[in-house]
Image 1: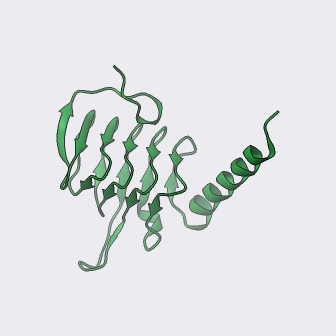
Image 2: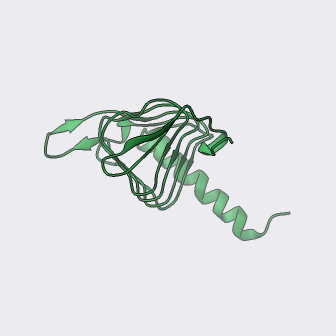
Length: 139
């Protein structure tokens, strides 16, 4: 039997998922994990798409609009991706499947499938990788 705090956390997680997917109409797969500390764009919430078994770490920001350019575009995160802490994914970027984004990175262009990107702006530092559930690197 789980302690009461675990049931409360699970209930809050489900309520947050319900709010994001039903009320704001974000496209978040049920198996994706979105940290409480991450920030998903609420100006254009329908432009957020997160694939299955992906993990968004605390402090990460996923944008789906650009105020200066008056642009609203879809931002997509593929399957089994890991978005590191304090990473920034800009409007209109499509992150492929099995991609790891390093902590503090600024993703301005579409990274290819099966790669690790890091830096400001994010550059491919390794290709041909395999990831498992929640973007864990398979050795």
